[in-house]
Amino acid sequence: MTPRTGGTEVTGWTALRGIAALWVVLFHYRDRFTPRLDSQIFTSGYLGVELFFVLSGSVLYYVYRTEFTSGRFDYSDFLIKRLARLYPVHLVTMVAAAAIIFGLPIVGFREPPPYGLGEALAVDGLMLQSFPIIGRLSLNYPSWSISAEFLAYLIFPLCLAVVLRTTLIRAALLAIILFFVCEVLATRVTGSAFDLNLALTRLTYNYSVLRVVPEFFLGVLMAAATLRYQAKLAPYATPVMIVSTIGLVASAMIGNDLLFILCVGPLVSSLLLFQGRFPAPLVWLGRISYSLYMSHVVVKMVLMGTMERVGGYSDGNMPVALMPLAVGIAIGCAAVLYYVVEKPGQRETLRRLRLLRADPVRVRR
Image 1 (cartoon, rainbow, N blue to C red):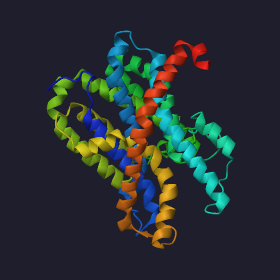
Image 2: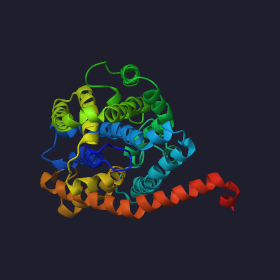
Image 3: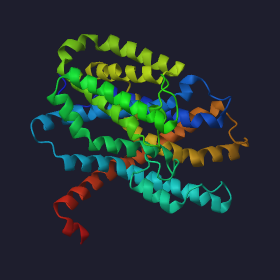
Image 4: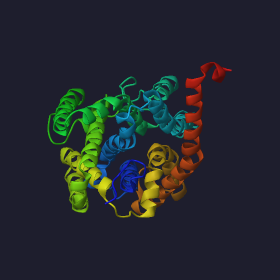
């Protein structure tokens, strides 16, 4: 196999992001159609976020490990890049959600929300929505995950130091301890029992840092182990990918969150080593996955009511045959957001933030 150096896209990871985003969309859209899509594979769609968190750790390790070991890692520039990656789409979808949630009640199309516009914009604008400041999800509610993920970015150098400057066995033991501690704390937050249906996968606005940190570190660890032993592991990439995919699907179908997370690590590892091709549409879907994830609920706020009124359907009772149309519209809107906002916004935000760091006086002028 050709050794992975960090300079090329891992298309398997990109495709997996697309699948994860689509799974979350189906999870959030299923309640508006009949017959209800209540099978476990649909109701487990919240686990798509676990795929995002683990992949994030793996991708960042893959990209930045050489800079870190050579002493060229610039922490402030890393955070600037992360903020530029997240914020343009977050800002647009947050404002759009606020306009819909607070605008439609004025004309009588929906009930007003149980929180104020000012507090919601402040909390979401500062990306603090992974903490129970408001006490509930607000505005573009899937954005809680980017708040949690940015907290993981803050400790990324520490994660790198652990996996690069200690043995992988010790790092793995730390990962197990970290996971156990976070799960125990999550049971305290949620008031649930400690079992295989994990409490931490239920965390959103209520301290979801407990959810992201162990999964993000797992992603860093799996990428480090895979690249360190890639020559030995490469022959097993395909069978591990198949078995772990079956394990993921099976665990989602039986509602076993712990087994699901245990299967994510080997899948991410095998995709890093896999040399085959993935369908181009799936890779493209992965590239727009952030825009899809961040916009699909905003689209839902407008689209579902419109489809129900046009079709004459009662609330939440559209025929399930229309669901592909709704998902297709969400993907189309995400593509527009990707090309019009995400990519140019990322470039412009990165330019301005770097300029601000270099010469804050000039930027203020």
